[in-house]
Image (cartoon, rainbow, N blue to C red; front, top):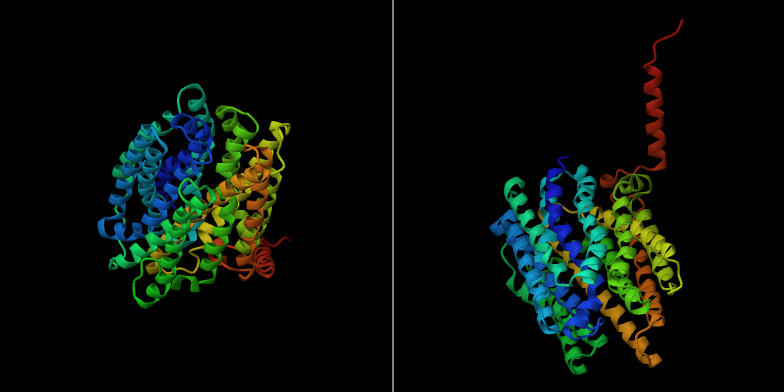
Length: 481
């Protein structure tokens, strides 16, 4: 398997993932500078994820129409433009709009990276290719917190967005020079009604729930937004089942592995998606750490994720997707619960050990679900399947941030006091409970689900292989007289 293609594609993921951890570390400083609160800035998170949810579904269609390489390169340039706009924002409204623009670029980067990898990699090499795609991408979150904390503490938060410019331009050069032209799948007609219905559904639901948990606008606006989004989603499903090539095809959920991954990961992401929002806030607002100190604590989570990438494949070969994903979901939820017991007196080394181990476990989960999702998917279904799998993540993450922010606001309101450590504890316990439910979809899978990709063998198969090796070794011996 060539490692060049996944490493080039990983430049975009590196930039996108580093950006997410950098902004999480700098939220209090940004909020103070533009005249808002750190919790209110979750609207900027939401705007980014809404943009992802709206534009991810058309990424495969655009790639097939204009060429995956061309669209992928353009997406990076849009992401750079959004980063520059963020750096020059002077108000919450400007920052939210800049994040939306950035999300338009990000909407094309991650799904197209995976789509290009799927179309240039043999199935037997898929787990390895996914690992090589995500290893450089995980270096971004490893560097993001300390770099973001350093720039925010000693220079200015504006620089955390400017650093995307040289990284993005380097990616464009590498893509232009080394990435081959990717053969497009059979061009499907664009489902414009489906695009508008899904856009209304995703943006309405996510934006409405975010406003419900933080009423910066009248409550009726949040209610109307949520209801309109739900209505669009309800209308979309029967519409999509009636046409031949829907934008997001619900028939893909007939594949058991794909269905389990989408629903399981949506619940898992309630915990994983809220963590980058909650942990830096708790360390800075609750414990009084500086952004740099916070970043030097939280970066070990990405370091743990990076370490797991080198040992994930043997684990899946040994116990299979089903057992590994269930175990990862349980242990990750336990890690969230433990984070909810942190207090200002908790030794830094203890916090870092917990964050490292949780990062290790989550990396095992994400590596496996990325591969298992496509275990039963045919080549002609790869584009639509990639779109649904990719759009699931920002929606779930946006809901995670909305849930965590809502719990923080509600807990603080019920106590009648400003945001404090107890509120963060309540938020961690709530998202841990939701995240634990991720085990349910996987319990319904067969034990050998996705074994042709993971390389998992049953005990009987391992014993037979061992016996065959012994026999071959015996037959190959020279007779001794």
